[in-house]
Length: 107
Image (cartoon, rainbow, N blue to C red; front, side, top):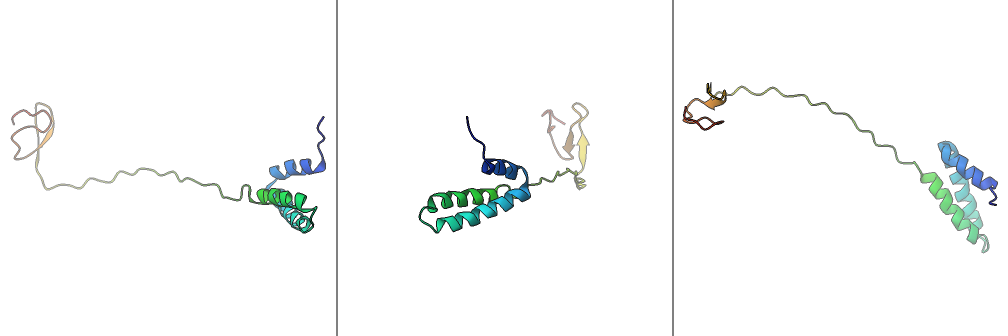
């Protein structure tokens, strides 16, 4: 049967509360640095520094926010060309066109 100690409970609680997570991460980094100064403590100090650094930097990036853009159609400029509507297919054609631009029949 696995034993759940106070460090495991602290890590679980720290991951749920951001302010507590940062404080525990900083404490672990400092304790890890102090322990790594001794030869035997280096076995425990370096992993504690890594765990502390991970706790410090988890969730430090701000979440990206997406702005919703709306499409506003721009008014079409009025052209100087004269357009003629072909009665057969109701397509607009240039004034000097010989054939319909839609159906191809002779105007």
